[in-house]
Length: 277
Image (cartoon, rainbow, N blue to C red):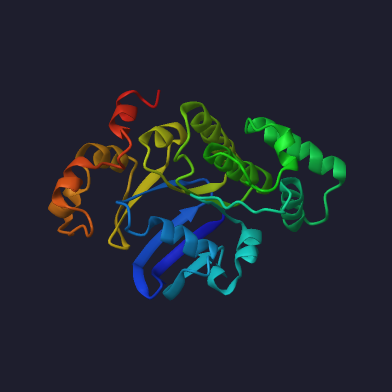
C-alpha cells in the first residue's frame, strides 16, 4: 500500500514562512479532509507536495513509498503517483487538450498507447465527466468556464489514475449538478484504491465523498488530526473551540469571524442539515 508521509515540513513563500512544521500521512484507500481557516497554509501544503517552485521547502521531508519527493521535479512526482487538481487551473494557449492528455498518459505508461487505446480512454473520460468530446480539440482550458476547468482537472485524474490525489478546492464555483459529477469521479477513484487529500470549504462535497478522517491546519501546523466528526464540529462551532480546548490562538481570524465562519463562508450548515441533498 502506497503512503505519502510528511514530516516537520516548513515552507516559505517570498521569504515568508507559511508552514511551520507540518506532520501528516495519507495512505492509499484513505480520504483525508484538510480543514482550516483561509490563509493558514492548506493550498501551500498541496503546492509544496507537488513541487511548485514558488514554494520553498526550508525544512522537513516528503516521502512517497520511501522515495524522497523533494529530490524530484514536479513531473517526476507525477510519475511517482502524485496528482494535484488545482484551485485555479491555468489556460494554456497553443496547447491542444488532446495532445496534452496523450503526452501525459504516454509518460505514465510502460509503452506508448495505440491511437485506438488513447481515443477509447479519452472518449470514455469525457463522457463520464459530462464534457462534450469536441472540447478535446480546443486549447487546454482556454476559454473554459470555471466549472469546465474543474471537470477537466478530474478528467485528467481519471486518465492518470494516481496513487495519491491532492484536490485544492476542486468544488469551488460548481453548481449542484457539476459537483455531483466531480464527486462521482472521486468516488470511482476511491473504489480503485487511490488516496485523497482534499481541501474544501463545502460540507456538501464531504458528505458526498465520505472522508475516512480529517485534520485541521492552523497557523501553519496540524492542530488536530482525528475523525470525520471534526467536519461537523467546525461547521457548527467554527474555530473558536481550537482556542478554548487546545489553547491555540488562531492567527488572522478575529474572534467574531471564528464564531461565525465554519468550514467556510459557504452555507455549509444548510448542506449538513440536508445530508448533502
